[in-house]
Length: 298
Image (tube, rainbow, N blue to C red):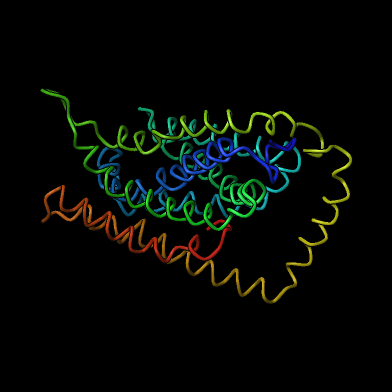
């Protein structure tokens, strides 16, 4: 059975465990697909916007900048409305950002939608490992392993498929273009949102209140967490881990955003061969991504 926050007790029913596991997998699928699909499409986006691809370099960096700015706020959001509710809102924001980014019209749609996607993913990056640790008990290593593999695998698939999708065309019609390709990169987000709402509905509604789950009873643990949060800034080991994880993240996103997409856009390659090369390069660098070595956000 479930605890009031949506977590699993030691004697949880197997069906409930499987439902939560499938939900985590669906969310993990969407946490990189919407951002790694941008790099391979920069040439098409630049052509439609009348600018050079280099001028759009910031577009691929916006999600990472948003992670740095928004991630420190995720804990406070979870404390206020509950972890399950915060993840649900992040998935809703991810859905809205994916649609907004693909809307026809002025360039701000593309930029503001990407900003919203980055902010939504920042919250999910921080809180999903927290829910895994809370909900899965002795199964944490298994679930974290699958979660990490899906992050890297989905990133590679998205980078490899967006260009062929943009070139698809209905009989006698024009190619779908980059807007439909970017929209397709978020096709599983509504499914993940519905699954999360169904499996965590008790936690979503129980989390409402000024201090999240437990109301004033949570003030003691929250105060202890605040003290621990202040101490970590003075911990040399924490800084070394942060530097190490930052370098791993740098390695992954440089490959996923710039080097792997360059294979997708190689003019001397047929589309199918370029996409396969892009997928394999992204998958190779995802094996070095920080999610392989830590449950924290990367």
